[in-house]
Amino acid sequence: MNIVIVGLGIIGGSMAMAIKKYTDHYVIGINRTRATLEKAYKCGAIDEMGSEQSLRNADLVILGLYPELAVEYIEKHGDKIKKGAIVTDTSGIKSAICPKMDALAELHGFTFIGSHPMAGKETNGFQSADPDLFKGASFIVIPGNVQYSRVEVLCKLANDIGFSSYRFTTPEEHDRMIAYTSQLPHVLACAYVLSPQCSNHHGFSAGSYRDVSRVAKINAELWSELFMENREPLTKEIDTLIENLRLIRDQINASDRDELIKTLQKSREIKESLD
Amino acid sequence: MNIVIVGLGIIGGSMAMAIKKYTDHYVIGINRTRATLEKAYKCGAIDEMGSEQSLRNADLVILGLYPELAVEYIEKHGDKIKKGAIVTDTSGIKSAICPKMDALAELHGFTFIGSHPMAGKETNGFQSADPDLFKGASFIVIPGNVQYSRVEVLCKLANDIGFSSYRFTTPEEHDRMIAYTSQLPHVLACAYVLSPQCSNHHGFSAGSYRDVSRVAKINAELWSELFMENREPLTKEIDTLIENLRLIRDQINASDRDELIKTLQKSREIKESLD
Image (cartoon, rainbow over all chains, first blue to last red):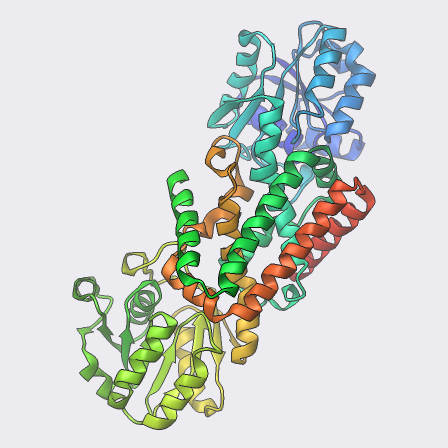
């Protein structure tokens, strides 16, 4: 396949590197910042430095852009995409993206399949890209009404570049689950480090501090967009968490050890049953 | 030194293994469950299976017991401890323990030094013990009014068995900081997995889910005691966290992207400044 990757940040860059490392597909990069594009070419992450004209011959277009920018990009350049080509985004929200992309696909005659690689780091940009970022990760696919044979093309590629499983879902289920599994931990990490105690943690902290605070090294531009575009499921999850924190706090305050043990035991059982 | 370790759980067991592996001290184990004591002896984690009579010749007594049990143990057996011997607990709370231990030390003529090894796992018991558990960890010491030459004996041992730094502190500062760095992440992990979404996380989760939920595999007996005995600092930290979660939720709800970016940016700066 001729694969065009638009946006060589950590996700687009890692996709490029992984496709080059593990497949024989031809990879063309497009990137706003020319220096990054050149860097990607020089280090062999892409076969060619492309432009919007490269869309005309692409069999697969992977968008490694922020969600709104991804839609804007296709609004502007969708007419250049070859009929029958597959376009996939990689963005962390779906309800706000997929219907718009479906309409653009219909209009221009390409096939849109939403996807979300469940991998990342607490750093970003092409300098954080890694051909093995997707090793063992889950590849979430929103097939919509697309023919299964087209979806298979994308899943085959995901498998080739290291993903260990796919998960087919709807935009709504995706957003509800991601609010919990990914966005809430990011909100949490940020709220956690805002405590006045945080600055004194040295010498008093170990693994549990490190793990909860890790993703506080957040990309504020990107995540504020993801949070805003997923307002309802996310604020619902924040509220559920606050409720459960209050439950535990009240049991501690009431010196109700039996009830507290029951709550902690329940948490333990949930966690153990899912590991 | 003749070192007696009372309680061969993950901390006491790891202490025994580490002392055997990295020093020439003679290690005597005492444990309520005989089978564990025999296991520790057979695998070479201790040189001798001891009893309370072993306290009479100990230069150093390390208590690997739950906090209240540690005090009860010394109340019952403190009279057998050699004059001038050093006794240290390893428990995760200090204000509720140190004054009682100081009084018992005064009464029986031994030296008490509170300590808290900042290392652990989400599993427990002797089967989780590991001679390298303390590698690179911080050793918190509550020296109280003890002569520095005595404290040095304990710090030298900590250094020998892998700790990379000490932190001298008071019971009050210890408890306030541990409420934040260790207890709050445990409360958080338990509250987090209580969400109804948790059971569906497979295929939708990656590193941030894994890190936040890790310590939900909690030892409910132990941690309920630690939480209860540190009620005030801990509930204060839970309240601060709830407040900061609300702040972020309200900014998302209000679609106030500029303010949200400012908050996330502040979190990022705090986290980066401390790494």
